[in-house]
Image (tube, rainbow, N blue to C red; front, side, top):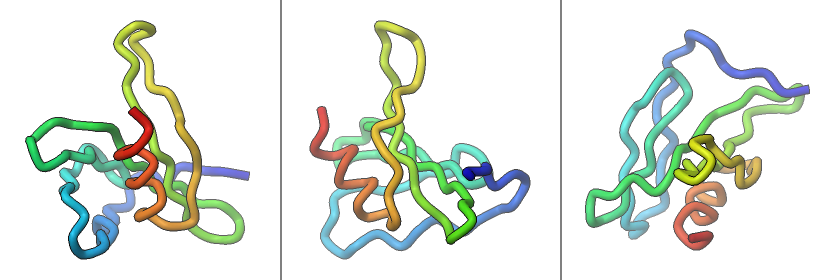
Length: 87
């Protein structure tokens, strides 16, 4: 069962060297993923599951004015790669 990590100020995940993105805090356990040009390409959300923390890749869909969950990943790097390459 998933639960959001509420009120806990988590440090941003460490990003693999050479990945041309940066993270900007949006809320506790939520970060904007910003590419090298300064464009927000999505959000990275930390979620607590019974067996550890997973990272959800989310992208805003302007047509529906809602976020689309792209998937849950065991590490932040995989979630970020999903946001980078699923456009």
